Image (tube, rainbow, N blue to C red; front, top):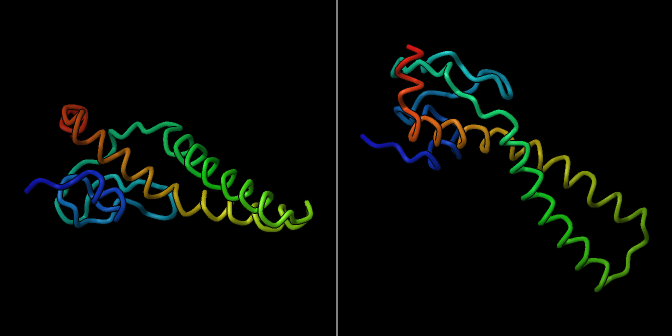
Length: 118
């Protein structure tokens, strides 16, 4: 059975079977899948999830802030009150699925790293 890396990543599931939980806690990856037993210690996503979250959120928040400024001209305190929680909440919401997707893509394209770790 072939598991889509994007499907497994968005659901934060094991990249091998697509069923087991990938995380224990917020961003701690489990050492192995509880369902299929796949060793998951070989992941090396580094700063990738944070970079993608920053780029994606930056484009969305800056675009929305510019639209709000052009159409409504809100005071600066309202900009801060709107965009700060949106940015922080968006970053927290995006980190897990982005990290899981990068792990699943690495599993798909660098499978030998996972096989050697086990």
